Image 1 (cartoon, helix red, strand yellow):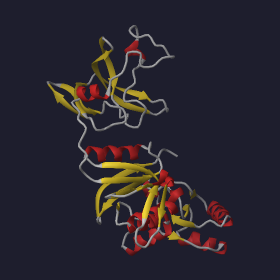
Image 2 (cartoon, one colour):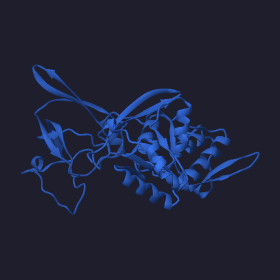
Image 3 (tube, one colour):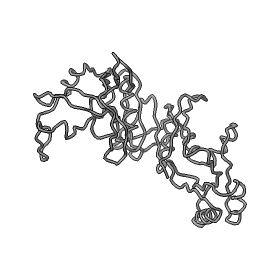
Image 4 (tube, helix red, strand yellow):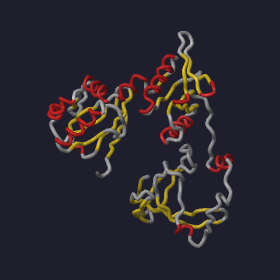
Length: 330
């Protein structure tokens, strides 16, 4: 959404996706701004939202309501109706649903002038673990928007046949996965070994994979990925790695002393990462990890980052997009 002025009034322009679980239909709207209010979500997070006034139709009745604008793509419903909008007009029966009826698929298509795109593009498989994951749903929608056929494949439901002349990949029920143009590989850490084995199988069958088994395997080993970055001339934080608990003191000195970061060699989304603020805490954490025979890295703590990092998307050796992430307080 963005704001602009019209006849000395402040307006807001925004897009809505009126159909639940679909971003294919997009409606561009413009309304005068009535107010800006701090609104606290059900999770307790407060944010300032623009307020607009708009007519709302429910059944045969239409009346003006005030709405606050927020991104609800990942929420259960596209819109919530508040008590002020319903006061004196609506009676709620908590035991019932859809008492005013619903719309058929054809009615929705007619309402939004929507047509189903012809499938004439690629035959793509999405190899992942959770079909309900928001990012997986977005990939399916994006493929359909472009006229591609995208099929979700659960990694654990796939199996393979290794054969010198006719290698095959099968899906539950004995379905042979043939005629695939590409496979989008989204392999979560807990199924890295089997997921990469499947990716290699598709590669041996001549199917293009977006993230190859080799690239996924390299990325999951933090030590190996750091060594590859150094080889490519990319700066990294000073890092120490050792096998023997006898070398703990030298490891700590190697990275400039405390505070320092201790992290497991495998793990994502901050799991297995500890900030040791003193030398004594660092020694305790390192020795505790080593007593469990866990492989770990000791890394210089970059205080200047102030809880921020940059994620860069690289395609064919070029950064095509980036996002800055900021950690929550504490």
